[in-house]
Length: 111
Image 1: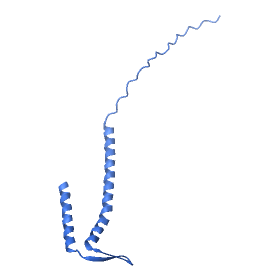
Image 2: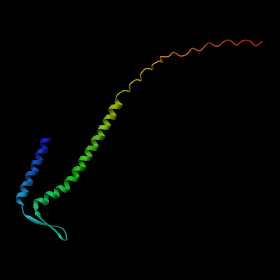
Image 3: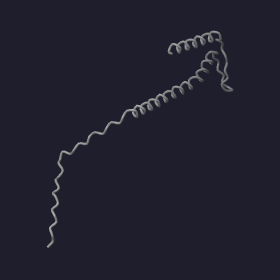
Image 4: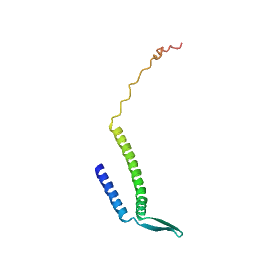
């Protein structure tokens, strides 16, 4: 998959280089009524591409990070639910013996 991504980026850069070479002309861009910027046409194209690409790419990375965290939490919960619960440890008797209760005496007849 990495090779496909690399080939696509190389093709994109080659297309941009060809476009830049063929259209290296100065253009005037009116930002506001009194603000005029003189620049080369490829600079405007690259800037426009980045303005559209970067925010969506950042949103994609944030969503991917959030989904990875959610999947990891769900996998951990499933793993914990699948393992049997450990038996409680046996009760340890007290080391001190309980005091002995004397037996009840029979009731004496009242005379």
